Image (cartoon, rainbow, N blue to C red):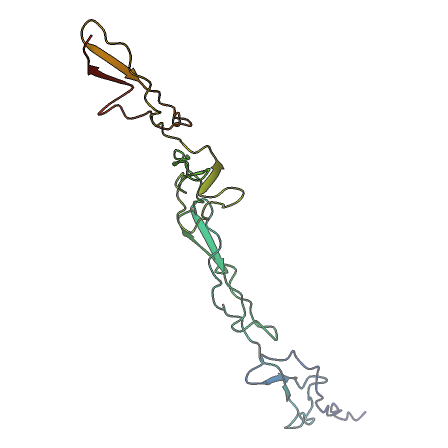
Length: 218
């Protein structure tokens, strides 16, 4: 019996599945595919010279970066904080966010001290039925940006009604008394023109007070 050589049939190559898209760079990304569906065999033709890769437009990833710092916050217990957003630029198109640390910053500070009123001074002189006293914003004084003392309901000064002091003045002299055995007689007067009141001064005792003495002939 005569044997014949049986050769395998040629198998032309065919494109396999597309692989994942590569990184987006300058608005473009690429993907590729192998010639394995099937792979060429037995002298079959390879896949076409074009078609192994494919390009596509894409949005380039933008990594986030920190923006400007905001103003420092209120000083509390000797510390204050400020923050900044991840917006210079904000992350986009799958870009990375800003680092997990760096959004806030702390520093030592002087805690604000609000002012408070000190003690009242003494009442001033009564003038026209009014007298005033004052106090200082010093217990403590405001410091490190703290608020000054409140002006309501009562601020740095206070006024009240009063009775104006009236200084005494001498009234008229009385009649001369009888001449005594020593050759003297006297007369008196009262501090009643007007009488001192409301803390006013007594009548002046010099040069002559409430009694006047003169010589006489008995």
